Amino acid sequence: IDGVLDPVAGTGDAQSIDLVSGLQIRKPRLYRSGFFVDRAGAVVTSADAARGCTRITLDDDIEARLVVSDETLGVAVLAPNEPLAPIAIARFRADPPRLQSDVAVAGYSYGGVLNAPTLTFGTLAALSGLGGEANLARLSLEALPGDAGGPVFDAGGSVLGMLLAPESGTRRLPEDVSFAAEGAAIRALLEKAGVTAENGAEAAALDPEDLSRAALGMTVLVSCWD
Image (cartoon, rainbow, N blue to C red; front, top):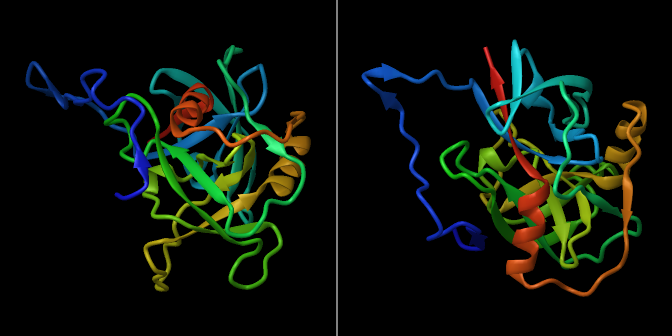
């Protein structure tokens, strides 16, 4: 996909082995992305990543639980069963971004196939949803289902929001239309969960490699198991 930067291209074996000694490995029902929002390891992710799961894991082997979910917004907050020490956490942009400004989404586009998130680049098309929803932003970028739940960055690395899962109804939008839950709405949900979000300071634009490194430290694979 145009606009996608793979931060681990050429750095290791990205193959996933589905069969070991003739036994099929059990797989999650659903893969989504998420991102750390505090130093104890709280994670923001797509609401469908925690819906009806008997078990939720982060990066395949870290057990997590649902703290709060807003199905209308499409966002859930998870907590690891044991405290973590994330390499990086999201810092939310405090002021509204400019229309047509550059954005990037970090996510596990291909589920657990790659061992690191990819970056997908695009622009901020609107500060609301198609119906004028103030808690949404419309993005011009081609995301994949596995990217849902991932952080949406501005050019300086602050988080603007969270990429929402694609609609499952009969309406089909152009491939380069995606939506994000807006940062202020996510912060309000985090407050309900007892999590204090951090503010991001205004910063100069990062080059793609630096932004990729920042995303690598805070973006996590979320798996929903039956």
